[in-house]
Structure formats: structure tokens, C-alpha cells
Amino acid sequence: MKRVLIINTGGTIGMVKTSDGYKPNGESFLSLLRNMDVLKAEGMPLWDFIELDELLDSSNMTVGEWNKIGKVIADNYENYDGFVVLHGTDTMAYTASALSFMLEHSSKPVIVTGSQIPLCEIRSDGRDNIITSLIISASDIVHEVCIYFGGKLFRGNRAIKYSSEGLIAFVSPNYPALAEAGISISYNKAYLKEADTEEFCYVPFESIPIGVIKVFPGIQFELFESIMTERLKGIVIETFGTGNIPGNGGTLLPIIKKAFANGTIVIVCSQCPQGSVLLGEYETSMPLKNAGAVSGLDITTEAAVAKLYYLFSKGYTAERIKCLMGKNLCGEMKDEETA
Ligand code: ASP
Image (cartoon, rainbow, N blue to C red; front, top):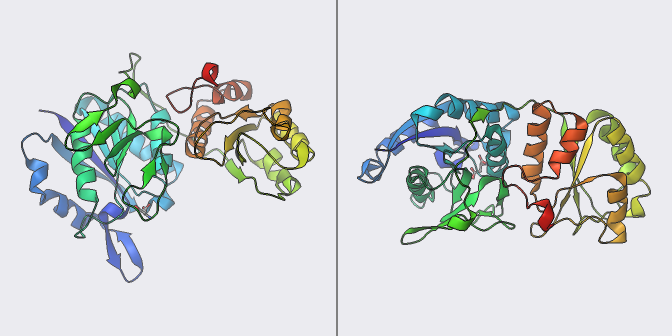
């Protein structure tokens, strides 16, 4: 019989309504799970339950919590066939992205899920999300970090939270869903990762100073100069369309050059969830290309942030990080050749 470890980190799924708003509540949540007969039904894996010492609204997740989740998985890696991480939806895509890098060469399914309505409420979407995540994590088909939500399984580092209200809260705009749970669970085998042949290794992250700058019409880049060149080690610039910025690079170009000289890596993402960055396609993205900014191609901002943490935590040189940021390491972006 398959064994799965459920790791509860907090989030709406285990929250209760209080006079201060929804808050995590571990005790009532575990008894709710224990009372779900379906979780003991034939065909379900055996499961154990563990929770972080402090349950969090996922808005409060930090690199420290990512490391705690990664360490629980690493410490229990050999003892379980799969892992289900219960997590708030707000930063679920960041955590799933972080785990996809942190659990280097992992072949075990790690299914991150949660809900929009607490499990203790009548219309909770958490029920299916937990049941189906447990089934998927014991299926022997999935060998990667995924998000299961609202009937769909997504690659964890390709998903983004798309709705704050809908029960289909996540989408994966640049990579097909890995499975759809209808009458049966139908896997999109062509897009699933194969089991990794290299040895599993847990890579804890360091709290590197990283920033995200969203470009907007009229942005005064000079206001960001000191943090970009002196404080931050990694910067994700969310540009317009295929990588376009205002101002012909007049202000940004020297700042980026100075940032690079100080060992800061600048990666270009798009504000458009769907599609890819293509530096140099327009005159308005040529300055970024000329300054040596890295094209993030079709990576999500969430995955770009996690990847920066990962590469800096590996202790690589700035030159190596710059090179690897533009390459597909674990399915987070398309391959350069197809760019
Ligand atoms: N604020 C909650 C969280 O991210 C939202 C949710 O779980 O849906 O923890």
C-alpha cells in the first residue's frame, strides 16, 4: 500500500472564521481530516500528517518556511511514496516554484494544494482538492512538484494564482495542465516529467535580497537606482509585452550596467501572463538586450523569484547565475532553442 505524507503549512483550507477574520486552526483541522471517512476508503493511500510549528496565512511565508517544508520532505523522502503540501493559495505558486528547485532531482510527487473555502464550511472546495491530491501523489505517474486545484494538475513552477474568488483559482498560461480530474483522472503524459535519474538533493535557500519591479507608463527608473545597484542581488523586471520598457533605455540602461558590474542579476519577465519575452523584437526592448539583461522567456515572475533564490543559494558566480537564469533547469521555462 502506498504511503503519503500530508504536510500542513496553513492557508484557508484549515482556517476558521474569527472576529479578526479567517485564521489558521490546526487542532480542529486535524480532527476534520480524521473524520473524513473517504480518506480511509479502499483505494486511498495510507497517510500521515505533520504540520509546521506555526500555521500561516501564506502571505506570511518566507524563505525560512520554504526551507522547513523542503526539509520535512527531505527528511522523509525515503519513507513515503509522495507528499501533499496543504498551503494558502495567495503564495502557493511561489512555494511550489521554490520546492521545484529546492528538491533537486526529486522523482517523488509533491502535490501542493489548498482551498478557497475552509474545509469546515459546507461548500468547501478543499474536500476534492485533498482527496484528489492524495490519489495523484500515490499514482506512480507524477515525478515532480505540482499544484492541484479546481480539478486540474499543473506543473508547480508554471502555475499562477489567477482568481481571488473562483474555485478554479490557478492557471498555467504557458504550459498545458498535467492532468484533469473529471470522471476519471486523465494524465497529459506527453507533458509530465520523467523520473529523475540523478540522486535527490535538498538545497536550502538563503534569504538573498531580491526585488521585483513592475514597469508602468511614466516610471522614473532613477528612483530605483540605489536599490538596484547597491542593495539587491537579483531583480525581476516585469516589462510590457515581449520585454518592452519606456524611455528608450535612457535611464535604465546605465543602471542595469552598473547593477551587473556590482554582481546583480537582472531578469526580464512580461506583465502578460501568456507568451514569451523576446528582447530586441521592438526598439523599446533593445536597450535591455544591449545592457545584457537576461530574457526570462516564458517564465512566471513567481518562478523567476524562486530561481534567483536557488541559484544564489548554490553559491554560483554572478556570471554562471546570469547564464543559468536564461536556461530551462526544471521545466520552469521553454528551451532557448525554441525561443
Ligand atoms: N490568505 C489565504 C492564504 O493564502 C488565502 C487562501 O488560502 O486561499 O493563506
